[in-house]
Amino acid sequence: MNILITGGAGFIGSHVIRRFVNKYPHYQIVNFDKLTYAGNLSNLKDIDEKANYTFVKGDICSIEDVSNAFKEHQITHVIHLAAESHVDRSIENPLEFAMTNVIGTLNLLSVAKSFWKDGKDHVFHHVSTDEVYGSLNETDLFKETTAYDPRSPYSASKASSDHFVKAFFHTYDFPIKMSNCSNNYGSHHFPEKLIPLMINNILNMQALPIYGKGENIRDWLWVEDHASAIDAIFHNGTLGETYNVGGLNEWTNIDLVNFLCRLMDEKLNREPGTSASLITYIKDRAGHDMRYAIDATKLETELGWKPSIQFEEGLSKTVDWYLENQNWVKDITSGSYQEYYKKMYS
Ligand code: NAD
Ligand code: DAU
Image (tube, rainbow, N blue to C red; front, side):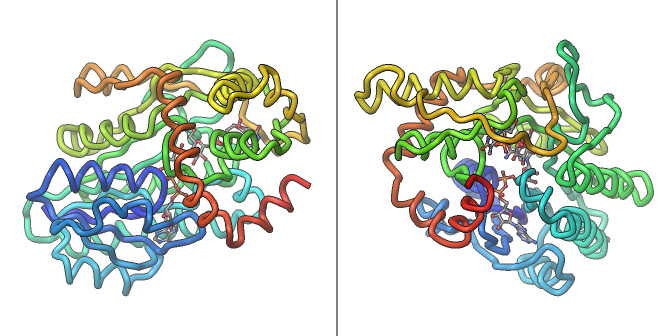
């Protein structure tokens, strides 16, 4: 297989690439990434010398960039993760999200379709999000059959891309698979997102900005467990099918941040309560979805997938990674992020 993995320099993409390059030395892995503010090749410095790994700088919205990569690397399979991924940024700039997430996905589908006319086995695995299902009440879980109800510009753009992916399956018999995952956490997570932002601010004794009352619920999954789910679905999932991915690990934002504060007080030898004193409630996110939670029964029963790690252990490992990789944080936050942070939080 010659697999084009888009968005491989980002958070989840880098974990997927690391897994595939190490586990499948007989596959050729091509990392196709535009290197936006969220992409960082140093995420992959431990594997970038491997013989089965190549990086191609390119834009999924460009017919030329994508066609050249398909031609030059004889691409037989795609795992598509490239996207604009941050909800707050989508509220400020919805058009950019439509361009990358909708048009970019459609372009990638169209180019792949034009190249894959040889009757051989191909797979286009589209990586999506649970946010396309909308906001849950207190008890339900998102199933693969839950109706789409996207409510932010980000989730609307992901929902639209999902619909194009399914449309290609139904209209052209194009070989797609799809996964919709809950919130990921772990190493190499861009510091604009809740968990790395809080770790950073706790470390630097800065305010911990909680939107609204902090009662919104997210279902957190270790990023390497997402990568293992993608591996299972890519190899063993049924064409045309969607698989939900999640770890039944729901936390309100305020409980999660308080837990992180206790953990970091311990690790940094601070007086108990020091970090929690930084918690600051700020204006809520516009249209803030109340609760996400995934039912992953289909993935577990049909493909035998299971999360490998408990949240408490995963969070502790994540904090250790950030404490040991402060240069990574400095590098990735040194550019336009400073301006973004000021605009968002001051
Ligand atoms: P990320 O923002 O960390 O990384 C996105 C990557 O895509 C970056 O490397 C960026 O340079 C690249 N990219 C952006 N626009 C591009 C373009 N036009 N052409 C080529 N590359 C481009 O994102 P992430 O959190 O790793 O998410 C990856 C995928 O997983 C996304 O599709 C996202 O919707 C989905 N997802 C994320 C989560 C989560 O919790 N982070 C959960 C479920 C699904
Ligand atoms: O559910 C999957 C989705 O999870 C992915 O599709 C998205 O790409 C990913 O960014 C994530 O979206 P969220 O909006 O849930 O993640 P975020 O880390 O931005 O926020 C998590 C929760 O924390 C959310 O309820 C908003 C809240 N929050 C976030 C930030 C950045 C705060 O209270 N304060 C903050 O400063």
